[in-house]
Length: 328
Image 1 (cartoon, rainbow, N blue to C red):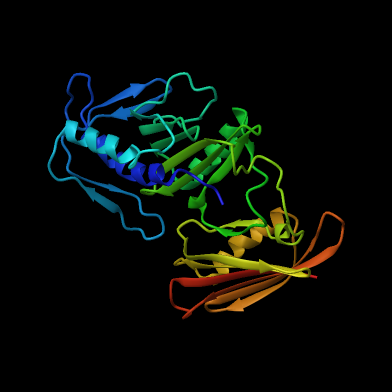
Image 2 (cartoon, rainbow, N blue to C red):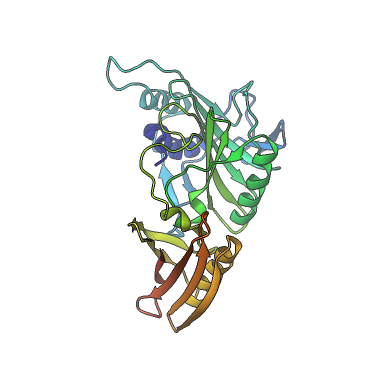
């Protein structure tokens, strides 16, 4: 499991709202005025705004934050107090919030798409932690494609130790990349609209848990045979996922919400399974459900068989149960 300072992750949801409310220290601008920072990042200054909304992945409904009363000084005091230690004796730290800008002299490169709006960055020395909040004028799929390419081009490598096995994941669950064994980056994205995506980028040192170091302890050799399966666009995980493994089989399951028929969801997963070398043996289905049977080979050349089952309950609903299993 990835571990981030929880208070920062939760606070920055509000910080995104507060940023739009706080006038900058430069000369006042009319609401909606924009300026462009280095790298083509838009910095937006909104002087007067009381209610703001943000994405709420999976539900389609925005999260609304309302701030009543106060002024710029009160908001800054609130953020400072919230992020400071609530009791004495806690390890010292220094937290810097950059509204609309990156920290200066970063020792690594963080790609930012053209015309993206940088809302804020939060830097924390104790955890060697940095968070960026961005609005990107691209679809979710375009954001994922941009970062899969640009992170590699700037020296980051896809993490290989992010847990045992794969299974069903939402595209909003993000990407994990490493800069050697020193730092790791997790990127999470969720659609605000068809053409705008909320992007959260977290960079952290590798003290303690790290997906950038070889795994230690017990790790079965079966769970990794199940690849990561991204959900189709417009769908989301609603009930989380679960799974298990023994010496002879492994499985994972998830509850999804989607308006797509089971057959279209199956076709989306089939393409991903074939990409990682699974061979389709049989498939079928009817209204509301689909199934398929596969063969695959592990690193030792031994043959395994996979089963994928998708079922809507009831068939006309938007709730879909997804299950995938690998066995001898």
